[in-house]
Image (tube, rainbow, N blue to C red; front, side):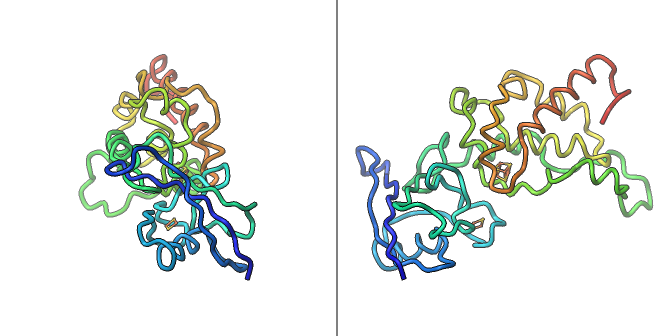
Length: 241
Ligand code: SF4
Ligand code: FES
């Protein structure tokens, strides 16, 4: 079982003057994930190390962190696939609460702002379902697979320079509902994202697309929203997606 060196970002804003990287050595074997290694450190080497996780299966998004140069889910990343020392730091663009845990309050505020729920309009009496054709479902693509890990927003240069920018995760979700034929809040949704802190702040740098551990494409979603806003300004709902 090889010993693997880790360099992990440590910082407690309440007690530390500055962040530092601390080294640990962890016995790893085929199948050991970065998350398992963090648990090993916490259980056997240093109980003060703080990080988030929940599902351990790439579903909840809580273990996103910067590992050896890119954002990844710790629970889905095999240690033996990485070049040691394995360097880990928390998501950027969010204040550090402790070590690898960041404060996502702003991330969630922006997410709530875009109204991330289906708005079907007036319900027809007796109607129990809102059916969708195969083609209509296909239009949504994999946009519904976002696990809200925050990696895209952490990698976004525009979020770094403008903390008010809604950011790729919220905008991807906005597009997911604009593109949903069952949703009837089309104009409200476009209004919410049509501003300097909305889609127009995006400079199409593609960091978010590269960072997403689920291979989603927030950059394209933002481009679709821009097009939809312009179409709506010129033609109204006539050519609505
Ligand atoms: S789009 Fe990808 S990177 Fe961004 S929050 Fe969703 S799953 Fe995470
Ligand atoms: S622990 Fe849930 S995605 Fe990693």
